[in-house]
Length: 152
Image (cartoon, helix red, strand yellow):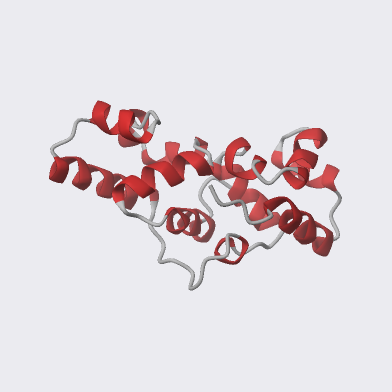
């Protein structure tokens, strides 16, 4: 997994915002120590925050996901509902069961198929793995969550 200095980028955005780590931690509902880890370790952001908390963090710090994750141009938005449709199409095309898909991607997706908004509880690594399997840019889902304000 490519890391791209997420901690440094996050710290710079927070400092530019004039907010303290404690303010951000409180707004996210996490401990100050957990927030400090986000800035200190590049692997924390993709693995420790749910997508709804990432969306809130990016909103608080006015971070554009495509710029933060170094994607150009920004991907077209894919809503959680559209993501579920794409997963279902993939399963039908590949004649694959949900269980086989879950084994392939390494994540439990059955709850997600029943309620697309559950994607907000997944972390970035889970979203990447699911989207990579079906050929969807994971950042397009993050973009949708940010633009629609879901989970905020």
